[in-house]
Length: 146
Image (cartoon, rainbow, N blue to C red; front, side, top):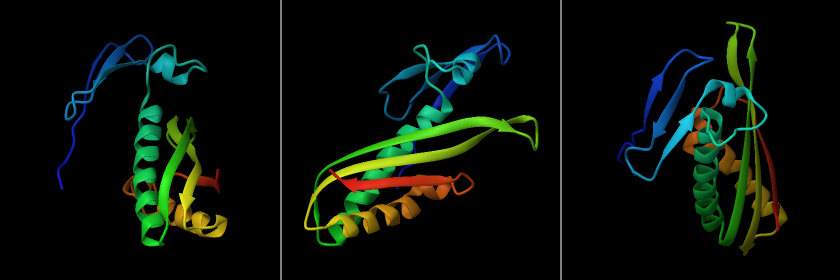
C-alpha cells in the first residue's frame, strides 16, 4: 500500500505566526492554519489539525463501514458521516490535547436492519485505521439508519 504526504510551512511564533498546509500527494489543496484561529470559536477561513483529523476519520470510517455492511450481506446506498474533534488543555504538560471525537453516521442501506447496521458501525469505529491510530482519544458513535 502507498503512503501519502502533506507539508506545512510555518512562519513566526505560536500566537503571531501562521502557516499553510499542503496536501502534497494528491495536490488537491493548500490550506491556511493559525493557532489563534485554531483556538477560536470561529475558524475564520483557516483549517486546523483537528479539522483535518475529523476529515480523515470520517472518510476512513465510511470506507470501513461500507466494507463491513457488504460483508454482513447488505449494500450501502448512502452514508453521511460527521466527526467533531475537540481540543482542550492538557494539565500533564500545560499544553493541549484532543479531548474526544464524536462520530455520527446516518445510513441508507439495504439488507440490514437497525441492529445489524449498529453492529457494523461499532465494528467500523474499532477497526478503521484512523480509529486505531487515535486509541488514546475517547471516540463516541451515534449510528442509525436514515
